[in-house]
Image (tube, rainbow, N blue to C red):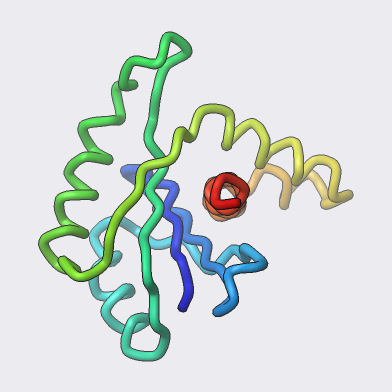
Amino acid sequence: MRVMAFDYGTKRIGIAVTDPLQIIATGLDNIHPNNIIEFLKKYLQAEQVERFIVGEPKQMDNTPSQSAIHVKGFVNLLKKTFPEIPIEMVDERFTSKMASATIAQSGMNKKNRQNKELVDTISAVILLQSWMGTRF
């Protein structure tokens, strides 16, 4: 079964997913928060997901950041809508910077490097890879 990760934002939610063997994390999409439940219901009809990973926004001193309240609401919505799927939180500090650096190193043109949707999706991949790295 797959594991799905979310980099939550009030404008976009970056989504990444593992392969069924949970070896590789791949960017799936980015969805407006108003459309996420509909998207997930359709996705879960076709694929089995055993766990959700959600980025936990923290400040450098390990306290919740300003966006933590939005993420908490998103997590509550996931729990209410998909109570059978466990949710784990993963520290998301630096994921956007890491995603931007990855994009910059990829050789993409400037327009693509500034694509915030791509940054959100890659941030979700980094979250998922981070979680995968802690399992063994």
